[in-house]
Amino acid sequence: MSWGLTGALIACLCYGVATVFQAMGARRVAGSEGVDPRLLMRVLGSLPFLLGTAMDACGLLFDLFALRELPLFEVQGIVNSNLAVTAIFAGLVLRIHLARKDKIAVAAVVIGLILLGLAAGPEGTGTFSESGRWALLGVSLLLAVTALVLGNIYKGAHAALLGTVAGFLFGVFGIAVRILPSVEPARLVTDPAAYAAVIASITGFLFFTTALQRGSVNATAAALVVGETAVPAMIGLTLLGDSARPGYGVVGVFGFLLAVGGAIALARFAEIPEDEAGEGEAEPHPEGDGNDGAEAHSGVASA
Image 1 (cartoon, helix red, strand yellow):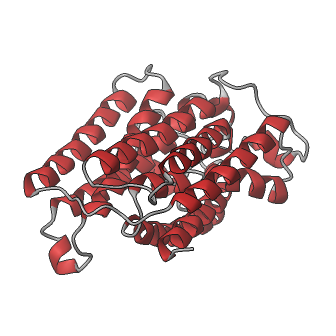
Image 2 (cartoon, helix red, strand yellow):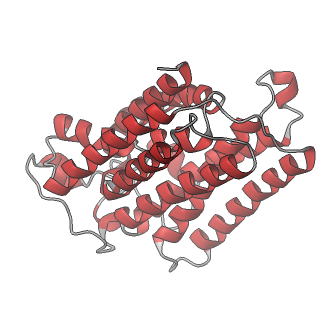
């Protein structure tokens, strides 16, 4: 197993466990109608949320390492499978009952991760030109403004739409980290891609947290997974020269689809409903009812 693959798996584990602690802490604070940066300040005052954030930070370090070592489609596919870890950890710690379909989805994620591991190849050698890096920064700003408009002006917009924009922002983060030529501070301060990564990660985190408050958790988290995996994978394959190991292309694609599909099926675990945390055998809420966000204050899925 390569070090990059190990880093991606550890990041997946950290992000998945972090979601449970963040969901426990986030529901203890008041929600927010629009996109309000003060929401992050409120949730950071909760000890479980702080613990989850610390695990997020740990996961981020391994994620950054993996993004520098492996193709984007493999890293994003593995890291975004963290909802399977969340489902298992929530079942153990919060005694949440996993439905049969949840167990099947977890199995799909595990098989997908195994196949991605088998297909793991080195990252491509492509990169962005200077103008491309500035364009990436412009895209991150455009997405942030779009999410602000959707969140504060068009408040009737479906939460999944805001979740999709958040997913694209996390995707921009992955692309930006991948194309950084160096992590030396002196070079980072002059690289537009570094600023794109910072803007995309912070605003994506805020917008996804807000989206979970106002609509279906299932639709929002599923939209995030699609936005965060599909676009970086396409960019990596078409512009950065990413590929699987020779002869393992089909295996890699199938593993990617299994892992992402399983994560989408487990989307409800992006936010752990309050009544499920309190009662050991509570059944899951009906999917797509649009009320999940109203029944719990907030939940935060990791990038």
